[in-house]
Image (cartoon, rainbow, N blue to C red; front, side):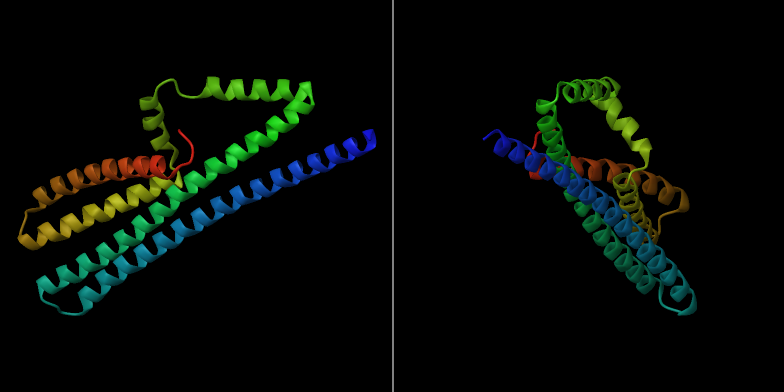
Length: 209
């Protein structure tokens, strides 16, 4: 009987270790895919904008047609960027699910060994003490990390700003006014896109963050 219990516990431990490794691999895969999507997004954006500039210089089109074409390209790129941003929100949620599963695996081993329990308690205490005391401070300082999400939001904000510049330039705004509106659009777009991320993550997440 004791042998059967020991075998079951051994099998359970082997399963937990294999599951831990599987989840870590899934997290790594999520990171790689996120970077690949962002790099592809940057490549497409650079090629589309660069190609548009070259073609408009070669082909002698009326100003209004050039503006319409440029607006269409920037709008398409923005939709592509927003799709990429939505995928990153899904990645954020999936990442937290993975982390929760890893915590449960750690807790399983902590119940088996007091030394593991003590180690995990200290580790989690260090992480808690190292966390930001203020949500505002965390929100501001996190922006300087340059994560894939931050870069995607900034890229989408630049596209919004570009659409504004092209549209207002077609109306006849001066360079000074264009610069002002570009900055205003960039700031407002960034705020709105971060707010959108926060709302979507709370709506779709099975956890409370």
